[in-house]
Length: 206
Image (cartoon, rainbow, N blue to C red; front, side, top):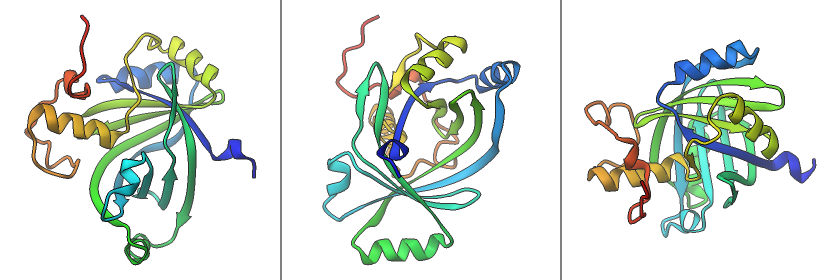
C-alpha cells in the first residue's frame, strides 16, 4: 500500500448552520455516504503525556463499528492540514481498551459527536455536531478541497487547524470550565461563542 493511502488532508470550519450546508450539498448532487450517527471517541496517552506533547493522536472510536486510529503531527498550508493517518477496524472496543492499558496507554479524555458524511467528486464532506458547536470537515486533495469550499461559499471562512480536543482546551480556558470530557451532558447549559475557539493569548485583528 502506498504512503499516499495513509495520508489525511483536510480542513475544518466552524459552521453553525449545518442544515444550509446539507441543502447545498444535496443540490449539487452530493452522495450521502453515511447517515447521521453518534460517535464515542476516547483519546489515549502514556502517563507522562508523551503522545500529546508530540502532537500524536491515539484514538479508539465507536460508531457503527470500532476503529483504532493513529495520527502523526500535521503539516499546515493555507489552513489545510496534512498528516499520516493509520486506522484499523476492530471487533471489540473493550478488549482493545484493555490491550492499550497493557501497553501503557490510558484514556485521558472522551469526546462525543454526531457525524454525517457526503461525497462530492473526489472530496468527502463531514457534517459534525459537537457539544460546543457545529463544524464541517472537508477531506481530499488540497485543490479539490479549495474548489468545494469555493462552491459552498466557505472559501474565506476561518479555518481551524487544531483538533477537536485542542479546541476543547481553548474553550475550557476561555469559559473557565473544569470538566475533562467533551460530552453533550457537560455542555447542556453552556453557551459557547465562536471566540472561545481562539487559542489563548492570540491577538485578534478586527
